[in-house]
Length: 515
Image (cartoon, rainbow, N blue to C red; front, side, top):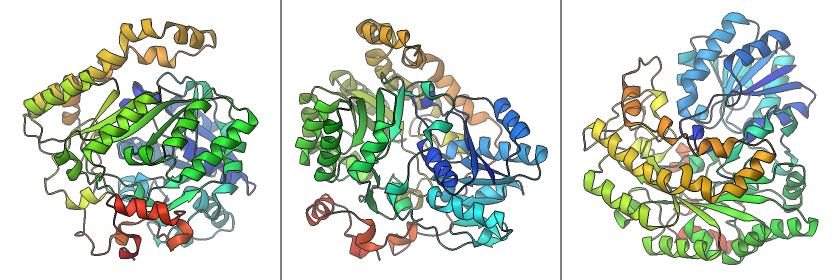
């Protein structure tokens, strides 16, 4: 069968700070290729809707599979599905991905017959089964994880062996378009999947059932060896939870003499627990490290159940600075903030050397806060669920909230974007330009055109065609009811006794209480 994989267009923050290759979709495409199907991939982050419809008309795929990892992409996906069905009624349209797994029934309703199936769970496991079912004329609602107008299939299934996956990077037509900060161009790679913690604002643990699976170091490095880009973003939710795993991958990289620049994300307590791992990775080319602090006071940390004490977070920042790498941190703005709170955070942002990213507290389907947040939503427009807009009641008038928010975000622009940064990175930019790379250079001057209080406010007045569905149940007594994938105990939790104890001592609920 012919499968066209489609990644939707860019979100607000990707227009400035980064544009990542669609690694998840490349993995799904590879799973279909492995069982003999013809596959193409188009990324609407860097290609147009016109190019998408041209591809449909020329190639006439049997199945069009949209990746929906972010709620804000839902309206674009639904509209494309409807227009595609109108132009190509014989094509079967499937939507999958992280966010799609939590709003599957709503997607079918929005699609009004244009979407044949929503696949919940890991697409690499489900897509070959779906294609095989279609090839033999079977019913889609028999496929594990499938949600269709005719009914639902069995529960989603895990990929049995992550080592069997290798992304179909060759299908991506514009690889030079992907970057994250100065890493331009930049590829993405996965060393582990899942997260054993249970932060209220996050849906990684609810999607994967608090599972945590590792990719074999030799397999990970074999994949890395195929990457031509000089920059590599490690997409793991929390990098190097298991120190011996991080060391084994690093040692394999060193043996092969591979030299890249790396960007990764981790927690402050993981960084402090596994200092030797991160010191070693600094010698391998670790240049950028992202820490999700989320708050700079104990009250804020308690709100998000981050469970890393403030003192430990600041200790982690000190250690990260000592490594001589660039550190980025995230702070979550709550709609309850007033002028004084914004001013205090702005002052802190100016005083620290780190790159401070500011995001807005946004309850998402699939998170615990979606079920427990008592404040009523002020908007259910999917497009505003991008952690840059506010969908909860604000203490300040909304126009003032956005002025304060952008003023706080502008600290990042003052410190790390614009002409000052260009002068400081002139040599780096010159090297980029010699290779024909302009992503980073262009990003330095996009902030003011994208982050504008008036534009943010005006987005709330746009006509709304599709609304995020509200929770239909109360908080379940067993948190396993949140899960898309039901973890199978130790089989899906590659945590040794010491790491398991570390996770629980950091405040996460013991796994045996969630059965």
